Length: 298
Ligand code: ADP
Ligand code: MG
Image (cartoon, rainbow, N blue to C red; front, side, top):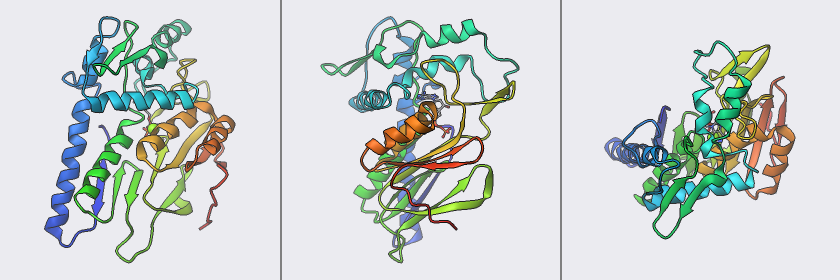
């Protein structure tokens, strides 16, 4: 998935723990084989190849993931959109871009974006992308989904406590062996050495969006790797957004959405969702939080 997973479990002995970790790794690999849009052999790539041509019957698992992604598009007013992927061709955040894409290129790329054009048919679990050149990708939700599934599998196997860490996206269950809650430290991206909060997470997920290596600078403006599906321009103004939610999938998708929605609209929406909280760091390093976050200064 292009990210590093770290798996922590409690077990009676080392070999049992390793066996559990092996199960989690297999599960994550299995999911990658379903949702990757880079690997041409996945069902997701099949959907993309048939954009504007025909519906593709997929497994109920992939169908349901897409269905939930569409619901997140609705609750975020389209800030979150898995059909963002056609814009990936003009914005590159690996240092290879030398100039801004032209207005025309941006217009053209955004014309293929729109979750309303992802047509689901429950009768045969098929997915149809209405427009030719349309493309879906799970870059903003797949890691969270994989983490949730790995956690679910290990809980079913009887593992009492653990942490799935997908490049900083944390999903926990149970407690530390001494009975204390797992705690996560939140650092300010402007000063990574110094954590500004230490928060307990009990059977929940915490996901941060904002990759400090993935951005481009043009005319003094810092463009993030998260793209606004309405304008075709990358989101600006926010450096990182951290979302707490019962599931990593939702936390992952919402952390990405907040970038696009901006500080005020983002916090406002998060405050309306039960059991969901967020912490945003803006470009000046200033911290903004949703209603129920009590920062415990270190
Ligand atoms: P990160 O952990 O890399 O900060 P995110 O979970 O925020 O990642 O996801 C960012 C990725 O999501 C982008 O690299 C891209 O693949 C995809 N993406 C970009 N913009 C959007 C969007 N508006 N809606 C859904 N996915 C997006
Ligand atoms: Mg995300």
